[in-house]
Length: 159
Image (cartoon, rainbow, N blue to C red):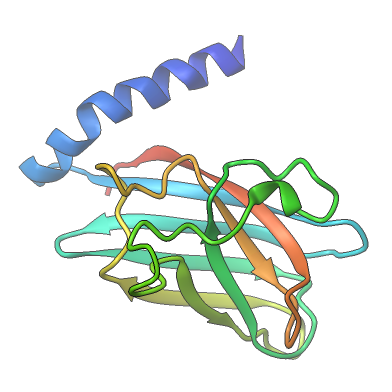
């Protein structure tokens, strides 16, 4: 029952969201609940908030190991594999020009916590190149290993 209600809410936001953003009454927001891959402990969430001319990326994560961890939007909205390989490669609708999937690097404090904000002008929450329905993958510092994965899902931010 909750899943059905959530699906209806997502559908309503997909239909009404772009118009609401254009009207300025609300901000379209998507979120990826991050879950660790096998053998890792990373958890938290990454929010994507549509602003005028860019998407604000906000990450709140715990249990990261020291070092800079690259994170990217990936092709598939599938985190089912133990190593997150089911998410596929980087999502890049520009086809090799600029890596639109690259969201920067997450560097935790001495407790393994990250609070990160970044303005991205290349990603979108609506349209043909929308990141909604794709996944976000956090990589290990200095390695392509995938340590966390989450599917980007739309929700409504009532700020």
